[in-house]
Image (tube, rainbow over all chains, first blue to last red; front, side, top):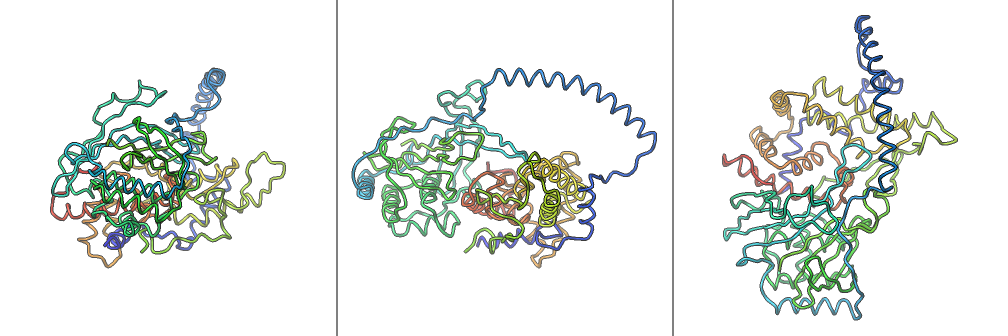
Length: 332
Length: 209
């Protein structure tokens, strides 16, 4: 089905050339000009050159003044600011190790989840409500990434006919965050309006999840559009599912059972999540080894309470290592 | 089933080598800094030439996909490689994701410079040139649906299917993992399919996030 979309997209491609086409002769001329430091600009008239010289002199005079001002500003900034300029990220969760067999513990949590009943939705089972934050990094062709922080509350509402809507509200700033630049908590940031086909909201999970752990892998791969899942993608895939669908106790228990079957994760210990709840932390490496994915599961109900992504690499200049780069905590 | 492209693009190891992270392609022979005691100018020039030859058509196609094959497009291509040359002369690494970011910025500037109506005419003219056997109706429907998608989804579809970037390259441009890029592409395809259904029912318009 999606192959049709791919084929249509490729067929409607406006460009005449393809990436692998041979280099045209004219391109070699451009290469020569660039390396010779030349430009495409045609020779200008004497009058234009005179005007240009006057402009250049004026700009040099003005430029000199600007340079002095800029140097003063740099001196002031350098002498008064801290040496690093990291983006502010939420504090890392404190994790205490727990004893015992990790798989047995998760299997037990899966059983607990089944017995506890209910779904991941609140408000009469219609709304999946989560507190989400991610470090958004923008790269605009420059060497330096620009990072921003957006704490938000997501309300995904599911209508009986399968349609859905999304409302995003400004969340509470986390400790240390500048509050003067963030919108007031509760401010509506986005509202999709009347319920629509969930695909129009960019949601992936259109089919009912299985209740058999053996079928979860194929289900996640199909819905995510991936040929295979890394251990970290299993955790983030479960997260995406719990965001975008109302999931029953049996289905959620199957997700935990699936993790027991597949392995590839480790039991980090116990913690208190960002909404103040006790949780058991499982983690696994992401498909990018610079990141680690974690799920936090309630020891009392077996419900998945939260997900976190932590940067553990050493190459980013905008954040220290380790740093939380995204989290989701469900209201349950 | 590959949900991205039929087969991952292979970049010749003779042209580039992988950097410390798989999504970043480093040009072999590019000096780390001009201030190094030994500076091989011939190697420096040659590595830029290799980068230029490997990526010229990529840049042309990225620009044509967005601006149409006009004289302005040629100027944007030339400007992109002049910036790359200066970047290289200052001792910085050249990579496909970096170059792609430069081109996107230049295209953005060009868009702002042009009248929006003129850009639309260019796009419609380009559409008429689509050479595939797919019917005009389906192509038109797809283009209309594509316009209704949020920018993030539209952009990743264009990156994958028009600009022919690999998942690894898309990930590097967006600073996300290749796997994440693939998932976002799946998301965008599903949105586009739904948007096409809406368009075909004559209900198109602004929607989504």
